[in-house]
Image (tube, rainbow over all chains, first blue to last red):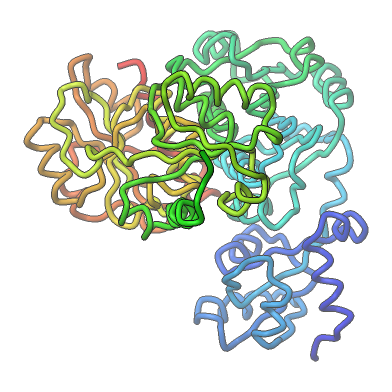
Length: 260
Length: 260
């Protein structure tokens, strides 16, 4: 089967936040990223690919999706380039449903460590935090305030596929604070003035459930989060640097809590 | 005094690697970034500013540079926008000399902790590593291979001013390995398979001088660096993630060595 102009226009619309919110779908592209989707069994609804411009590895990936009964539509390089969000398209683009669960409070007991991002507006930083979260076993990411859109092309790319394996909850500070209290999470707020990691680690144990909250580099966390937190945590560093990059700070803290 | 077309053309040329290599100068823009330059006493040769589009804080910054006898040239928004490397120029651009020392082997004894970046081609990652290096007291950054250009606008921006306080050495693997051996640095290579941080920390002491080497996310470090290293270090994380973001990995490791 071939692709219609209407389909092309539709997929392009998913490169915008408006299009994603309207259709509950998003796009991801590139061989490495989509290998992760296949690996994590996060299945697209449709694949567009250009067999000519794909490497052998890329064509194998298409075979992998076909074996899972995913609709794979061959298209010209020109069409693929017109849809792509990058300057150097890699010959394959996939359309995915946005998981419905990302709009609801996580009820499952499987979440023991959660990272909460408030106002992380840089998509590269948000994607990098998602990648580190999966690496350090934080299997839920909460976003509140003016965070970048989780399913935007830049966030998806910076997550290097971790997006396919992580659960999300887009909510408000109030809802997240209530959840933390109701479900007895220890809420740890990252600040420029607080206790160091060892102090807080000494107060936690293997059964502690924790939420680590990270704010924007310029403003830090909002007062309502700080006021509701059980601990305030600070990464010790030289005073000649005002703050660390938000993704770096989040990752250092998550790595500190990896072994509890 | 006013600005000539020739000066405008010259400053624009510094936005390119070729222009910087030819003229040994670079540009940095924005109030926050240039406040750091003033704060660290890293003085520009020239400032261009648009008084109208600057905040009070920005105009105070211009006063600060004027007090240091720096040439500050008022220009129109139109000229500033035409020179700027960003879509949202902040009303101030400065021209700096590239420190000559960045081409020579660091002889000073003041370097006890050095971060060595090989093939860190993403400018955001390199800038973030420079920022973390300053935060964790690594006061020399070595770059080899196909690293992003330290003085490119994106690296300067991502460093959030740390570029003004850090010493650099752009060199080759061979030269850097020789320096490490001759000056008795402990060379620690970051890999996907090695000892964890605690093991290596236990083998170091307050008088240890160390170089931490970080490679690209896709390829890791070159064999010559691995073969010359005293230790291979690995950040423990879940196997579901192949590797961490390079700036995150470098920062976690530097933070581990902050207190020795």
